[in-house]
Structures are given as C-alpha cells and as structure tokens.
Image 1 (cartoon, rainbow, N blue to C red):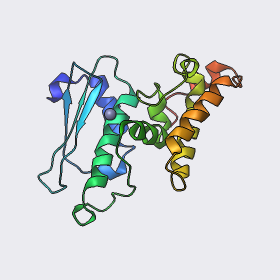
Image 2: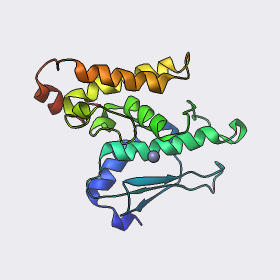
Image 3: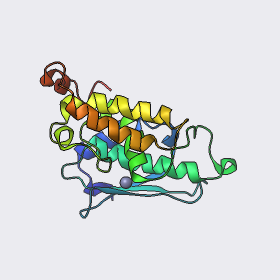
Length: 184
Ligand SMILES: [Zn+2]
C-alpha cells in the first residue's frame, strides 16, 4: 500500500504523526483512496494485533486532511475502555466530523494549511483562508475550553466565525501567509 503514496505524501504524514504523541508506537497502515479526501478505520480494541488505518488521496493532499484523519483515530482511542487503553492516551476527543475539525486545527498550526471541511465557515474566510487561519485556530482552542462549560460550543464557534468575517483584516495578509504551515 505504501508504494502508492508519493515521497512527498510520506514526508507530510511523518511530520503530521509527530504531532500526535498518543499515536506513537501504534501499528498504522496507510492506504490510498481516489474517491474522497480521506478516511480512517478505527479498531475496536487496542491490543498488539490492532491495526490503525487511514486512507488518503495523494493528489492535492493537505496537512489539514492528514490531521483530520489522524484525529479520527484519536477519537477512536477515546471509545476504547480505559482498561484496554495504552498509557499516553490522554484527552478524550468527542466523536463527530465538526469535532474532528476543531480538535485538528487546535492541535497544531501545521494543520491549518487549508480550511476545515465540515465546520461552517463564512465564504469570506473559506475563500480567503491564509490570513484567517491563525484566528480560526485560536477560536477552535477557545471552543475546546468552552466545551467544559457548555454543550453549545460548536454553535458558539460558528457564530464567532461569522463575527470574524465581518472584522477588518489586521496586518498584511502575506505576513501570515508566509509563516504557514512550517512554524507550527
Ligand atoms: Zn472525517
């Protein structure tokens, strides 16, 4: 399966996995898909035989897509009973696609190279992404903290995106652009 991944995709994958300490040491299979951006197959247990699998579309591959699929694996980790879980599985990431986007963006600036697929973003932000990436990421982190107090944190977040779209952009867009995504 690895043969179908390009060297560039493998490099991106290695860098991405380094941002997921809870996945270190897991047997992971990486496959190739043509049909969609990516998919993750989450095992039911976490024993030595367990294989964790993601599929990626190499063409146009972004760190955001890789991060999204790896976050799905960590969502799966949260479903495994604590007794079967390996040490180092720290945070419980809630299931769901929007949740997956939020936790992916918040994890590292590396994964902010493209807008998220499932979160509802105003068109102005989606089509003019680089200057907004850092702000969106900060809002995702804030939403994660908010979740401790309210179940409506996703709704709150998407409202904040709307407000953000109405704010004038601060600084020159290319300043932000130049720093993505390698200074994460
Ligand atoms: Zn997904």
